[in-house]
Image (tube, protein in one colour):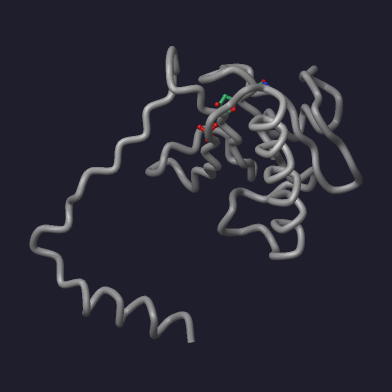
Length: 137
Ligand code: DGP
């Protein structure tokens, strides 16, 4: 099977601007900085995305994402941070290797727009909630 680009970064076949590394987790700057300090945190082992990685390894990645977010606020001058993990193409995932975006927000000159429009007209919220709740039991 063809290796994805993040597997190649883990193996040192492609360079990156490294921020953090341990046995399980690697963090580096996104090549396409939507804001200053835009980071990616990945599991070194290949999993397709957030929905398919085992919980323990997912937690390790999220711990590092939290720490990078804290650094962005404390040392980069960010006023906020978006933590984002796209799962599958329909959600905008372009690299099929689990990764978390840490996107510092500075209020101006940003390349990142997150728009959540209220689209709930006609939806049966009690039925939707019941369906999801049932599966979580
Ligand atoms: P997503 O769309 O959520 O799958 O984000 C993938 C991100 O990966 C995208 O923001 C650009 C980044 N990216 C793609 N190729 C490379 C690369 O070779 N190096 C680095 N540092 N980032 C990359």
